[in-house]
Length: 253
Ligand SMILES: Cc1cc2nc3c(=O)[nH]c(=O)nc-3n(C[C@H](O)[C@H](O)[C@H](O)COP(=O)(O)O)c2cc1C
Ligand code: SF4
Ligand code: SF4
Image 1: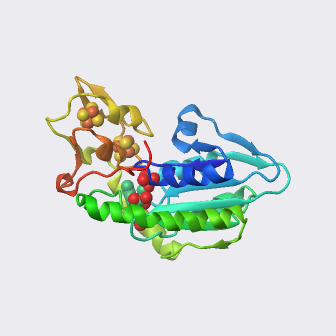
Image 2: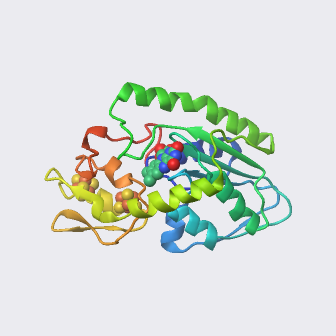
């Protein structure tokens, strides 16, 4: 079983590529949280995998919450791995993933990272399609590397560009908590009320009222899925309009 969280598709694509080779089922963390499916048991020799993005040098809140609530057991022995997708620096995501799984007495055998276009729209410009495509293509050999290690059940931490967890914790606390305030989102007149943003929001933070989205929670995961997915590019977060939209072209999210 491979648990994944993905807003713009990078982590979902990596999880699906691994799953195609290993035969492991992929399980969406946001769906588990919505219907409170939090108890799983892995059979002997079945892989347990986690594929998630790095958010502000650590993990998205929904992943943290899920891993805290997850009741995961295993019959006998097996191989446990985690992959983080990231744009610039994998922070200390590995530290938090390791800690969560150690708490369940299911230590992670191997950790990997795959670099992708950065979904954090306020800072990163994804409007240059050629540059974006190049980055997406550059991820393929890295995923091949991950699959090779997983199929051979190799142990080790293969994550590059990490940072000390104390520093990551500080960045995460200061940056993420403030940034997750939903009043920072705006909607332009080009919104046609299609409802995709509300339907796909992992934490049901959006509702459609009078044919336009409103944010009904004070804070959200800040996954940027609504902004990147909107067919009208109507959702912005500060000055993001000129930064373009990005969805992994190899998968649907
Ligand atoms: C709120 C937020 C914070 C992010 N913080 C980081 C970060 O600290 N380091 C980094 O390298 N990438 C960061 N990213 C980029 C994502 O980790 C990266 O684009 C990831 O592949 C997105 O995964 P997804 O397509 O599965 O949603 C951030 C993205 C978002 C939305
Ligand atoms: S996805 Fe875009 S167009 Fe559709 S309701 Fe949301 S903001 Fe409006
Ligand atoms: S409101 Fe948008 S950014 Fe926030 S969790 Fe929902 S989809 Fe993600």
